[in-house]
Length: 332
Length: 259
Image 1 (spheres, each protein chain N blue to C red):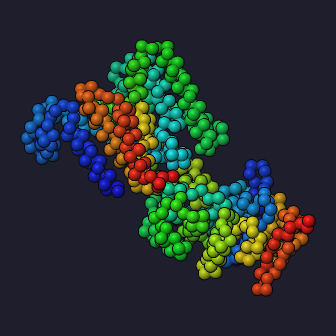
Image 2 (image 1 turned 45 degrees about the vertical axis):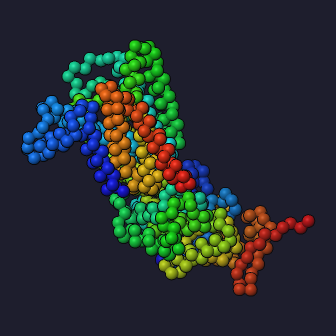
Image 3 (image 1 turned 90 degrees about the vertical axis):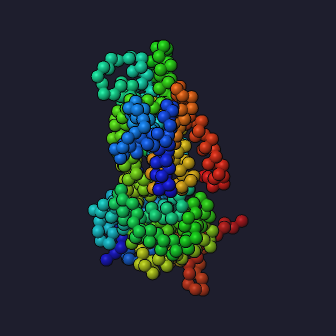
């Protein structure tokens, strides 16, 4: 299954790079790639080659990174909270990022010379801040997953209220904020990929290494402790990794819903419930899913782009229902 | 050498004491059944031996203080099945039993072929081979209890702690499960500590009983010494008759009040 997913990802990356809004002809793109590999002559002009290497490929890679981050974080959150409806935004990451992004849009700070724009920076800081606040409040209220969930609800409500207030005071920026919230992947070369890769890459490694421990957490804290692990420590490590990956994804893509819930569940229905399988397959499946949805978002109504969050819901919901139907009678 | 020694063990949740000053010794291969009325502290005492409930006093495993062991070494020595195990419904029986290998793997390592071999042997031993690929939610009550026992056995610990292992089982399944535990005890030298509500089953399977009432040990010793009519009636607030069958087995029968 893992090998099939790797092949699937390679196919999706290739197809999405070969085809795009600009009609370069896929055979010519193949020749360009071959020319780059062998040092031969390319049929593409310099501008056309730049479209492939500096526009399409970074965007495909970024979509893969963001999809992988959201899906694997969703799987991790579901494992930690033993709740199938948990998603990466559960602990205030979305509300924190939304609030910070709104404040930045409203305040419009001068940022000449910054490596990364103020919006992704604020979204990252807001997501990390939201989760940290939830964690601190949850701990001060006694810890435990139920308390943490409730703290997440409280923090999300509060931060959303602040965001709404800031937005109401500056109604002229609503469109910009709304557009960010619907999610989108806008790249400027490889910059976004290079900025997010360390966070998402490190988180992916940690979560894959912790996959077996998520299975152990599923038997409850007392039994998990009797098996020699420290459940609280495992939860902390997993949530930290998943939250960092989510924050990095949110910073460059806004709030893309659905991926964190749908992809892990589809993986469970197709490949089984052990996190030893769910975590790595969610990583690959999430990457594939978002590359495909982003491809549709940027090509379906080219040159206009549809918000990717709309496409994830449009594609994800029917696909999810189809898988549910295929597994009728086997779902608990 | 004793397999398990408790010296003045007082289990507590924060400041609330649930068992006080429990002393007991259990030889290797022995079966200690902790009995007592509801709320006597049976499960809490078991959990303090596992290390998941705080306690004062000393717990020795094969003469070594349990407190000196790392979490993983303690888990290699003690396997525990709670009264109501939380079974991840969609996990397969194999994946669930594989969790028992956790103490034998370093924290972030994956299972090795040797671990899969142990799981396979345990599944065969418990007649779960045909159910290996089935999801836990598809199993019957008896099969689920056997899966839990398989998870415990996959841990390859010397001491098995079973909290009410026959909960929810009919008399046939309960006997089958206890027979299995007894075989393990005799064939592999496992030492067993269990809590049991059923006094007749306790008398017939355990080598030693520990009667707790309100957190204190009120009787301890072989079943025929502990399970007297007067002791049971006093501590359980019940009316019983204690009978001995022709084969010499103890039976504790409830006796209805006369009209």
